Length: 539
Image (cartoon, rainbow, N blue to C red; front, side, top):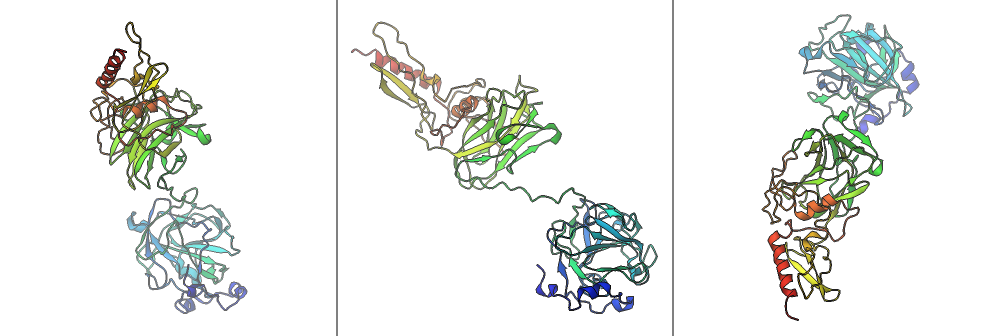
């Protein structure tokens, strides 16, 4: 907002201000040089710096007569140019302050006049005036572009925002160079409800000086300040997307939301139906572990803890891969990889697993276009991500077992994966005359259901796996935490097996505090031996 003194109405009626003849030039030089009566540009009036997008623009002279130019004077004089809020602008990245570089329309409108100023307006040299289309507040706005080296538009011409009007120069008084100033620059101002015409070829006078802010997102402009023009953009730049911290509650991060970006070349991504009506996919055409295109979720947690992750696997995208590589950062910079068979999971949530996340630091999940052997050319699909606090652990000893009686003298077992119990094994009933028939408890339950990745040499020992991070039985090792760095360790058996299985809905009992593998083969063998001994005891 302007200070109160800047928005006091002039006492002279507006009709008189618009019809009175302009004061002679010598009377307009320094008299009544004050900012009283200036007004603020409406926020809805999209107004840009008069140079192409990306140009660095320097404020050579700012607002008022003490910010570099004594001619930046008056705000509501009825017979003079009200240029208190004019700006002298240069382009510091170009030779000779940008002389000869294009000057663009700050907003759409119609050219009131273009060419050389004469008589009392001659000091502006070659100039262009545009009356703008904006009338959202019932007022008329006119912008001026003075001291041009050349002019490329004509009176009455309709002008689009960002259209070239001429080139930056130092013209004045019918000459291409001016003894009044040594530095080529653009004199740029915005007036409200000004008259137009007057002595010679005329100019914009009376009305009100307009503070032209915000302009391309900038406010409070000062002499010497550097700005970046956004003129020529199709639309004003949208506000930046902000991924809000993840709360300690279930949440879905949409694939078109602020937490996900699609990296690489946009033309390499296709879009189709998915959860919420959209999903993105791209061919797997880079050998693992490198990638070119990737979907990257980047987020923070409000509260540290263990969280379950699911990804949605839609059916609509064609030629879906059987090995989509999700890489997940967690726990102070570690990273795990999980392979998901998107071809086998259609229109369902796939459980990636459970990880410990820190509070207030960046975590990420990456799904790249890298392929595993046998999957080159398949499409990897990016859709929504689901996050929820994990259920508390029910056991903490990997490989521990529990038994219970069942049937007619039978027994069944379940095994701890370091956090949750497996499902009970089928009931095993011994016989009295020969070999017993038993079911291996380690082959049942959710920790191995749907397991498709079996290579890599993981032994299931906590923290000692030697295989790739996508194999079972090995725990993850620390990495640098960078999204491009491959993990050196692997997932727990529970996380990998569950992710590969792709449950349709999350198991409310699944959670993990301890990231340990399942029971080792020796532990399983010991359980079977103990069972055999128990069954062979005399009745």
